[in-house]
Image (cartoon, rainbow, N blue to C red; front, side):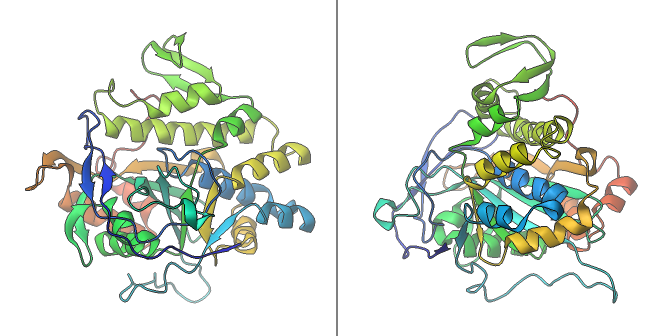
Length: 376
């Protein structure tokens, strides 16, 4: 389905405070565009559904029958070219002849509770990005790097001055968000995706739950869990990743919980026979594709092309990280914001732009905190 975006609006969008601060709501400018999707509950995670679709296709698409691929493709909604209106792009990676550049996918999670498939359901101010991640598949197709950018990061939004990075989606939809991220990082974005999680609880249950290593005993969705490895069902995993107020690091810890669930999903799929069972794989992909919209150029054929080069990828080949920050602060107009660490971020962004993430992390082991085995 080719999806077009709604006309610009001007009603303020709601925002939550940064860091560990309690949830509060200010105002920002209205969305000018949003991908069209089915009715369903928006949610507070970005990459999970996209990662599920992409990685499983990456690992197994080479063996999928044509009719299965077509069936799966029919469940993915597309966004009309979000790159067309961007006047100045970050440069593409330069590679020697015979080599492939990295593939960079900007993935957003939105909290929209309207149907983007039905323009009459779209409401000005209702769409915002609750999480922002860059997923990079290395040019040699041996690793995947996932970098989260805190939603309240205080950045320059082209044409709008300083603001929280998630305000870019409110101001100008996918195009302005891509422009903002490229301007901030210098990383050329090849594809864009928006994740919605109306069916992700069922997806987690379909694979028998996820194994998560809890740092402390805690109550999750009304059930008591001890410290250590625990299996969570879909409802419990959702509650685990939504928690923020009780976490010492607030949103920073919640991002780690989101990444932990992603890692657990991939590990579970690789270990429980989903990839070797045609019926399980088909069910998994059909559920996952119902939760994502992608730019129109990111086709199943392109996913399968990546699959041919990354069919041996495993969960430990995926590195999760969050851009270094200098803590939280308050903007001149009173918003609670995340302050990026410019000196620490610049070399990391450059490593992504040049497809040297693995080398950079190896040479600078203390520069970026990778997702640990257990989180708060």
